[in-house]
Length: 397
Image (tube, one colour):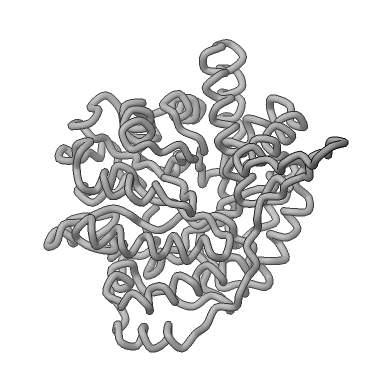
């Protein structure tokens, strides 16, 4: 999503480096999936289940406690304004899969922790994801006490490796302290050198870590690891890449990248980063990529999601939309169809900043699943993928 203001001035890098090296993040215990002890035989103890078996057992138990509507609700992350967080209470009590903290806030991390803690306690099923856009620069949602001001990704990419690692560690610690479990960052798009000003969604705001895939992969991996060290899941965005477009899908329809192919370096960068022990999510672009699939935007393309991301690159974790609630790119498609087409393409989590369309989207998925056995099976797979990620994050306890 696009920064709210057009100002593009950047603070002096040396001052930022001094600030970042001076601050230290407090250790925050990372959550781990719980495992239950197996029963013992009369002759010898039964071995504990393998980690994947334990995750499967947690997911099976969670599914058994959820009716069909509650299962499908796990596939949605819905926006709640940071200026009115009480609106999230009803969503959480209704069993939504996650809450997205929309906008900007100067609230202290401790105050946010009270709200997110309440959501964790009142959830009727699995704990909700609490998501935020915490990239740096102009895309930093949380700026109050407890959150250091972050340089843009372009500036982060100029830091020495140890200082970037310290920044990532502090970022993870601050989000964990506030109860944020899912960072919709870092940006993995590759913006070629010299084209930044013309790349409206990324380069014009310094949201890219570098101008080559090698530079981006090294820095993004450091951020992903720093978040994971504090139990915060990261989101690689925006697959298959927004580094070569000239318009922003939040503000324009028909955005296209005619250059990127399934074998392009920014596609390969996503594949390398997604294959991480930290288990990041992948967020899709809402642009169209004619050299990959000219028939539909990436968000609704089975070629992009299933054939390239899941097949060619081997990614089997949660795939998430960019905003499909308020973004101009999707306004020509009925809200319910946005959700069903995305899931049919092989996606997992629908992000809508506009909470008003959530009910329509949920009802559309339920109706389509009831009428179409093949689509119902697709929904089953998406729900299991979503809950497996929650098991890894300790949200099924």
